[in-house]
Length: 90
Image 1 (cartoon, helix red, strand yellow):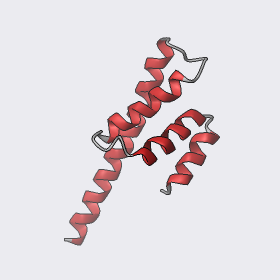
Image 2 (cartoon, helix red, strand yellow):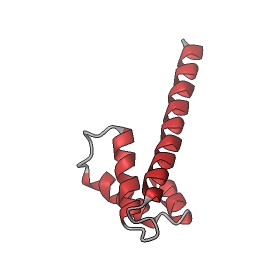
Image 3 (cartoon, helix red, strand yellow):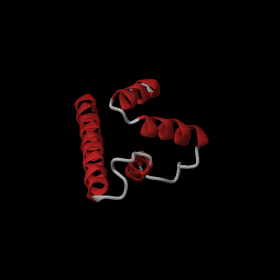
């Protein structure tokens, strides 16, 4: 998926801070040592820290876990799909 599509989708879900953070963090290149999970967790933290209705409440932990779980399932699915296609080719 093209990065601009991801940014547009984040904005359509009203995650504009996450979209800006994603763009900024990718362009800075300072996050290359992070795993995809750690990078994603930073994006979630950025969004939550700038979203007044979440603040530092129970919601912050809940939404962080939900976003991370969705992201991890997506990564696992992509990994498994890649392995299946490789085994079919080989």
